[in-house]
Image (cartoon, rainbow, N blue to C red; front, side, top):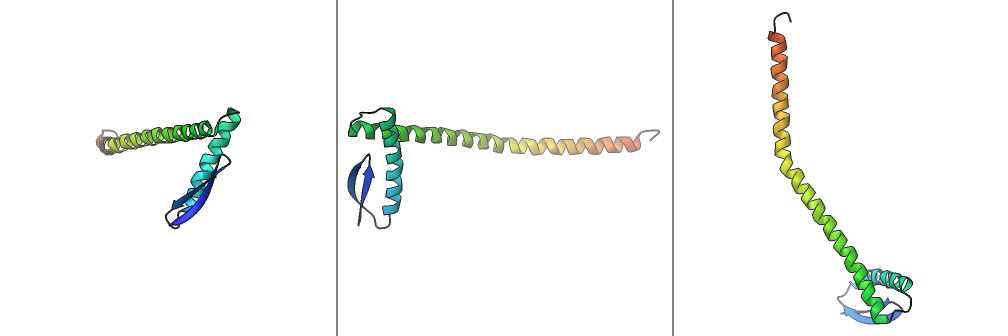
Length: 111
């Protein structure tokens, strides 16, 4: 087990993690730290606990927005996938109509 110290909202948090995860945890801590600073700037005088609470709420809000966006994309892709066979059928019909038009133009009197 590895040990690392994360600094969030000016406080040091020694934690244990699996070997090799230190950099990843430091990155996650930097995301939390950024949101904690945002909370402190928008509402000066917050206690440490409230600062971390607001940081967590900011991160949860971002995560929720991303999930909604991902669901919207998935639904859009699903609709496109469902529309694909219909689009192919329309294209095939259009090709047949063009061929019939060309044959009629050739067979038409005076052509």
